[in-house]
Image 1 (cartoon, rainbow, N blue to C red):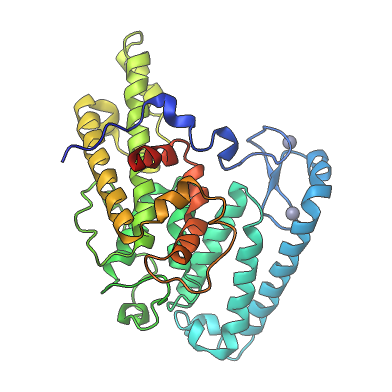
Image 2 (tube, helix red, strand yellow):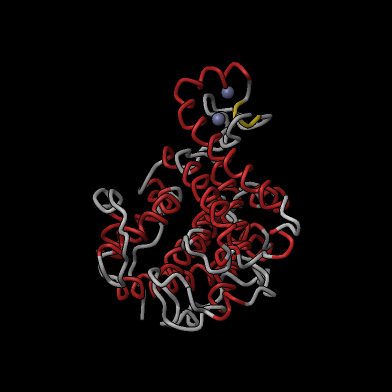
Amino acid sequence: MEPPQLFVSMSDLTLGGGTESILPSGCAICPKQEDLHPCPSCVAIRYCSDHHRKLDRPSHRLICEAIRSCRTDVEEESQRLRQTPESYFNINTGIFWELPETTKYLVALAMLVQSFRQIKHKASIELQLTHIVHVLRLGRRDFMGYRYQVPALMLRLHKDQECYDFLKWWIHKIPSKININIRLLSLPSMQNLNLPCVGCRNENPFEPVNFFSDKIPITTLIPLTLLKIKLLFDLERLELSTSIFGLRLPAEISILIMEHVPISNAVAGDNGFIASKKARRTTITRLKEQIHLLYCEIKDRNPHFWSAMVYPVHQRESIAANSLPRTVSEVQTLVRWNYESWIETPGAIAVMQNLKG
Ligand SMILES: [Zn+2]
Ligand SMILES: [Zn+2]
């Protein structure tokens, strides 16, 4: 089936957010991006100077103190577990949720991750990702549903290759239909502690989506769709840059420029796309088809989801305690986990809005 004509014209790329939606990564006060120092108390935000750190203090103080308090709780609990005759971290990795003695530590970590969420900065996202992967390693049962939040965090950090590897790994480990409410309580693979936390490396993110059958939860399909859109946007940007620079500059210079065009590490790492126009064009067509397939699949799984992403105001307000498939409450959880990653990719929501018609 021919996908509809909706995909990116470059002028669309500011739709769905604009620059203010991009994840800040520099000094919290000025545009400086280099020689930054983290806030010594929370480490979740960065400054170019002591002067700018002090200037930001009045607005940063409350959340900074909350994070610091959560960090102290985590450190105290961690210390307690290490001081046991046989440190819990040496012998119980993977089964932390099963042990009553480790629950306080896991809860303290969850509170810390929750407090990081209040800060929209690259440093905070990096910390969330590090802590969540740490919790996944310690407790495979994943009572917090963290494994569904990891892909969006990776996409926000442009770790697109790692995101695809993560999705592939957890997909292969999912044996049957599940939804976000089940929390993997009884999955045998979650009990196999010999398996690494992320066991796939350098999987091909451009490959067809056919194997994402109905066994794959909607929680996986959503970040996968954004990942494909990011790849598409990068290839579109490469195409545009060749048409701008390619005619006027010697080939070796335009290649040097093009190497800096991709945002996604999955595209930047592949010189074939920079060298070959044919490779770019073929892959762009395939990605559009894949995105269309994913759009339809997600719509089929939950008819409310795309509307909630395009008009998210009410959906993001409340969080469902119980999320059944195909319900509005499922949407609330899904939007909450994914929305930031989508608006930080300007144009991504516009693509889906056009598909929605
Ligand atoms: Zn500054
Ligand atoms: Zn701070």
